[in-house]
Length: 225
Image (cartoon, rainbow, N blue to C red; front, side, top):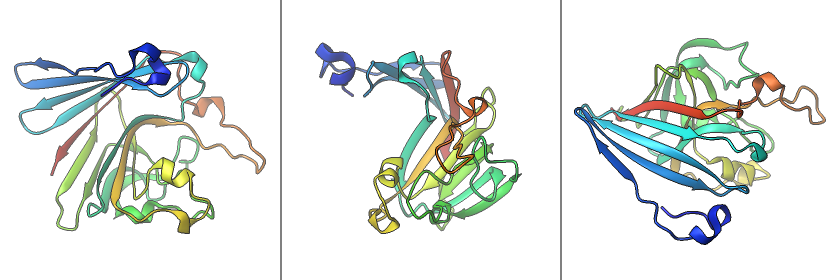
């Protein structure tokens, strides 16, 4: 991992080596990610691996006031597109957001990754699930990954889509989306609300924004199944 020239200038290409801590029942590897932002920002990510195969992932971030509102705080994974079955215990069955979940019900739901792509005329952010306790992304024979909330955080946001946010934002029409080669998994502490109370640019209500006034932390578990 190397630092960003935008973030740290003269520190360009200086290696940022991970730190390793070995405990009685686990080993923790910590990375510091320098973000491509102006002004500079950074996030620490810890992976604590336990003997039963579970991995506890923790993000720690000190907000930078000048960066403004944060759309989402979490992690993104890309795995092979063959892992296209999704099962989750949370709100559903349709997509939900901080300001769009009153009509959803808590339950266990399942579908295919492609089913989470909303049929918007212009591809855009979609497929989020709120208040998720656990989620599983598997291939047709049932093998894959299981994600669980950490008790200290409570329920999390989760999504599994065939495209990254960048790919969706850069397509003006569905046919401009690339071929599907992977499943994009996102586990997050929170996403800001989508707003849109009117058709001419209403902003997200303050109560549905992510609080960036103090240090942020987010933990979740994942393991193979």
